[in-house]
Length: 274
Image (tube, rainbow, N blue to C red; front, top):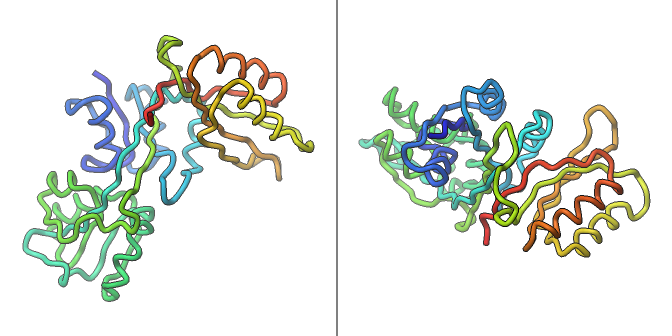
């Protein structure tokens, strides 16, 4: 059985992904930061880490790209989760009783419009959605609300007073499954890859790489630049591609290795968004 480190406590969206990907009996190690999530994996306390990498509303989670890259971790899979945010309180409370709502900054951002109708409620940033729900339940906190999943409400026996309060109702987050070693899938099963490369500051250098991807029949699904901290105005490019045959990807790899600086494969895995 896989042991998995997640950002957040049970009831968090990372916990839900662990159940979807590995099954209900997965062994979960709760961490309150992505740094500690990765640290548990590096220290071999867990076999796998699950990390949110991008959201359909808020975009990329840049620090997680850096964590995966800097620690030479490998993406071995991915999972897309429909994110539904619910407002919850103690069973004997109602929405009119709420004075403060604590949640992760991303959740607060995604639910900002809902709270315009409740100007008396103060919104306060916190570490994790489900951890707030846990705290309300454990300490019997009155007049305090949490924004979290329906699983968190069930686990911590809280009452949902408003369902699906996110501004954009179709709200997805992409999570990556990360290990210390690369994927062991057969080539025939691999149809997506995450790569990283750097380029010289020359006219058309990025366009040339993109042309290679196109010529090799690769579909670019994501491109994200990240600054190199030690070299001002130098950037690394993180790219996700999908393909029909692994041979097409191998051909592209061989060309990009020649054209780019510090070419690196972050992961080869199955495309979860088919």
